[in-house]
Each structure stands twice: as C-alpha cells, then as structure tokens.
Length: 103
Image (tube, rainbow, N blue to C red):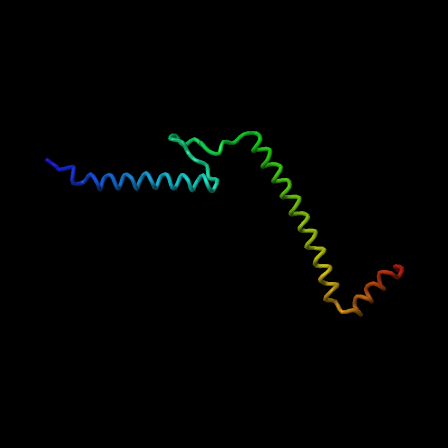
C-alpha cells in the first residue's frame, strides 16, 4: 500500500498555496477594477447598467471638451511666448503695421 500519511502535509501545503493565490489574484482584480468572470465566462463584477453607460458617455464628452480647451490654451501660450521672447522693435513694427490702414 501507498502511505498517504507521509504526503498529507505536502498536499495540504500545495492546496493551501493554490487557494491563497486564487484569493490574492481575485483581490487584485477587484482592487484594480478588472471584471471578474464566473464559471462559464460571464462577467460577474462590475455589472454594467444604463447608469454606468450614461456616465461613460458624459465623461467622454467632457474629456473631448477639455482636450479642445487645452488645444486652444496651447495656441494662446505659443502667442504669449512669441511676444515675450520677441525683440521689442519687431513687436513695435508689427503693431504699427496692424494699426495702419490697409493699402
């Protein structure tokens, strides 16, 4: 006969490590927002509903607006940098050219 009693602590340790690893990876997935899968591959967490879809839509719109605003701010900053780094006589000539009537 095969003495199972000699290997019982090893089997118990391996089983315990496997269960602890599964619990740890599940905790990491929940902590970082990854969806959990059920036994048949269906999403268990987080569940999606209309409220979440609407929130994602609103956040996407806000993101697009903020990106457009940042783009315009970059353009304005480029103009301010050009004015600050430009020599005063070139700036004066450009201002005078803009003040004079078009020919």
